[in-house]
Image (tube, rainbow, N blue to C red; front, side, top):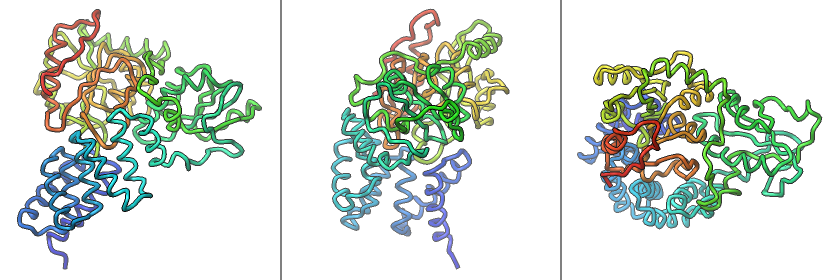
Length: 447
């Protein structure tokens, strides 16, 4: 017979594993319950080692970093050398901004397991966040196994940085989930298109229309078709979009200095602008995105609670466009009731299946204030729009904090500072702003 503690530990392991992959809204209450119960047992010293590691990971996701660090240290003290505890400690230290200390720990566990791609991935995140981009790309390329990505099509040669003059190349997208990674990796496409004779860009249905209007000098196609065969053309090279930055963006000054490599068609821009203008009552049009589909798990420090957006949602002479529109209807209703407003959204805006619709709504805004998400930050950033993005100062999971977009204002939030305080900083400084003026450079009152 399984007792309640054993059942809780099994539940914790299952929930942790599933949330690493997908942290949907339905998991938040479950994970909070598990953390509370594990903490209760841990105070009574009843927890197994695996359950204590689960608890440390849960607390890391929830920015309870001092507690998580203390728990990892207790495991290390007890076992002298425990690889999983050291790995979790390194992730905590990265999130805290203690990059040097995190790298020291990672170097220790790499010696014990030199072939682990997981360790190398976190080393890459350390290097990216301390400005060592060339070294970071080397570690990231190895960690994410770029060298062993299979060529999508037969009889094609993998591109390894060769001269593309008078060459025809196929570039394939890989991300089939959020889509954000491939969009910021695609910032290199204009460089490749300029160098090559012809570029075929393989994308997915969500991005097809937006990419077609953005890269009119290339052939954009959906996975499953091979347009070069219909055109009777041979292909010189194939590569994946995520391989490109390692060749092109070796230092910060290599990143784009001109905004907007994605371009919305005139008809789409006109359609969405007219719809938004019709309901905006000549007020400032501010797009907001406070969350993503993944609100639990490793992504949790990147999302906020809509009710914390009071400083923004109470700005005078403004209307607010919902740039999330994927889930969380109850949260929207609660905020609309509390702040006596209506977030603008349209039933025909299919954010789940059309990046073009997201781009259209974003383009209709005078300004977008957002957390780090595909809808609010990545797509508007790629369009060159005015974006104020609030994001964790440090993180161990994402490369989207690199300087992909010159029009972005990034407001960095330390792990122990609330989103609400940063939103107040922004609200105080754009209160008098009008769309006919440049967006003010935001200064943080909280460090």
